[in-house]
Length: 78
Image (cartoon, rainbow, N blue to C red):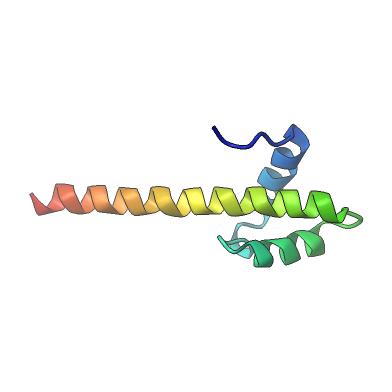
């Protein structure tokens, strides 16, 4: 099972990823800096939790994209 995150962390992270998709990637340190710049008055703990959630979502998206390209290659090569 995965870690449980509060709804406000997920909501803020999804909103940031939707508004600024090109500013985030699978690097936690980069995401932490971006969250600090985009959200004023955020505590360190909340900033890190949001950045961690964004990082995990970006890694998941990269993995899904890789799987899709492998599936496309298998279908085309047959």
